[in-house]
Amino acid sequence: MKKRTALRASALIGTGGVLGFLLGAVLQGPSGMVETRALAEEKPTGALAVTNAPSVPSTNNGPDQSHAMVDVGYHFANLWFAADKENWPLAKYYLEETRSHLNWAVRIHPVRTTKAGGEVDLKGILQAIDNSFLSEIDGAITNKDTAKFKTAYRQTLEGCYACHKACEKSFLRPQIPSAPSVSILNFDPNATWPE
Ligand code: HEC
Image (cartoon, rainbow, N blue to C red; front, side, top):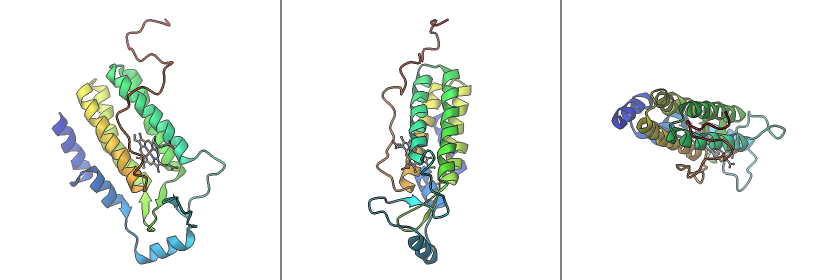
C-alpha cells in the first residue's frame, strides 16, 4: 500500500522526490533581468526574506496569508484525529476545509518573490500537492483505509513544508499534531449525546 502510494505520487510529480520536484519545477531561478527588475521594484524590508510579488496588491485591508494558513493548520490537525477515530464523515469535512483554505491562502498571494529575485508559483505548488497527496487522502477516507491515510498525511506534510521552504520560511516545519485544535467537538463516531 505504502509502496503504491509512493509510486503513484512519483508518477505524478516525477523523480527526485517531492521537494526536488517542487523546488525544481516551480521555483524558477531568476535570469539576470528578472533579478534586476525584482530588486528595483521591491522595497527590501530587512528581516523579511520573502516579499509579495510586485504585481500583487497590498492586502492590508483584508485577511493576510498567514491568517488563512492558521486556518489550514487548524483543519489539517483536526483531520488527523478524525481519521484516527475512524470518524470518516468528519475526516471528509476537515479535508475539504483544508483544501478550500489552502486555495484561499494561495489566492491572497499567488506568487511570492524570493530574496534573490526568483518567483515562487504558489498556485502551481498547491496544484501539485492537491492532485497527488490530498487526492490520496481523499481516496483513503472514501475507502476507510487508516494505513493509507497516515502515509498520505505524512506525505502531505512534506508537501506543506516544501512550499514553506520555497517561500524561504523553512522555520515553519509541520509535524504530526499531538492534540486536536478543537475540544468542543466530539470526535467519537459512536457518541450518543447530544441526540
Ligand atoms: C503553496 C504554498 C504553501 C502550501 C502548500 C502550504 N503552505 Fe503553509 N504557509 C505558506 C506561506 C507562504 C506561509 C507564510 C505566510 C505569511 O508569512 O504571510 C505559510 C504559513 C503557515 C503556517 C503559519 C501560520 C502562522 O502565522 O502561525 C502554518 C501553521 C501553515 N502554513 C500550515 C500549513 C499546512 C499544515 C500545510 C499543508 C496542509 C501548508 N501550510 C501548506 C505557504 C504554503
